[in-house]
Image (tube, rainbow, N blue to C red):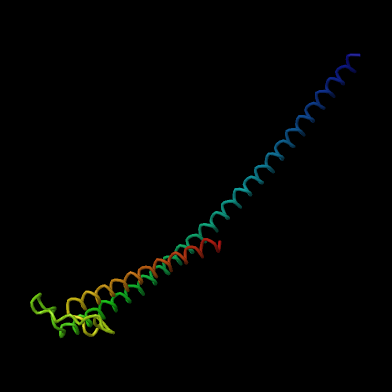
Length: 160
């Protein structure tokens, strides 16, 4: 009976060892599969992040290039406006100064065309209007640059 008992004990021990080994093997294989899936997921996430960063960098560079081009165009337009202003002010030097209070012309009355045209303005008045017009044109150029930059940025954001 002891031999039989010994045989059953040894069989139970062998069975326990085999079961433990197979369970350990399955556990390790499952652990490796989960680790492989997790690593693949992390790699995929990193690749997506890299693609998004590259796209963001490309978009930022394109927007900066567009803004630089718009700024250069605006600066060229303002330089042309400054040159036109200098030319206009130089032509105005030939106009007469506004007379003093004692030398004012007589009141023309309220006829059909009271006042004067731009060609009849005195030098200081004409100079003021020319400078004010140039200032307004510069503001329009600045506004156009801002609107172009905003439109480019909006297109880039909405295009994504």
